[in-house]
Length: 108
Image (cartoon, rainbow, N blue to C red; front, side, top):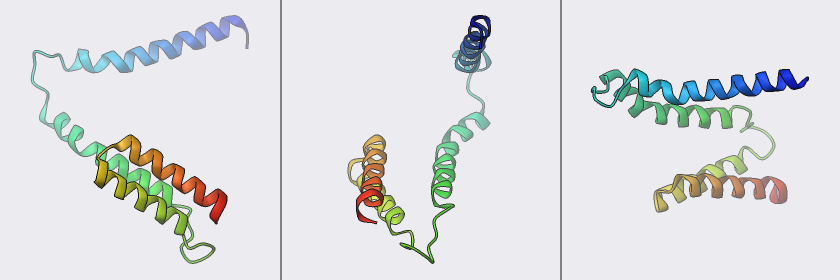
């Protein structure tokens, strides 16, 4: 990649990032109320994204062979229990991921 191509690539990435960051402020200014459908999407979208991530995580797990998905199920249990206890999303995800990796690398 030449220097000109690199500069153009970085410029396009910067433009795309700035456009996605500032576009909502232009479309929905602070002095106007946010439309109801946007408020609805803001309410339901996080749960939908988490649901899709859970489905994606379990899509290749074989529950009828091997370890029967035991490391994955234990990892999810750690995430759920920690989240119910501490209500800290980053702690729950990080601890669950670390626990899962320890299980996969050392136990199973």
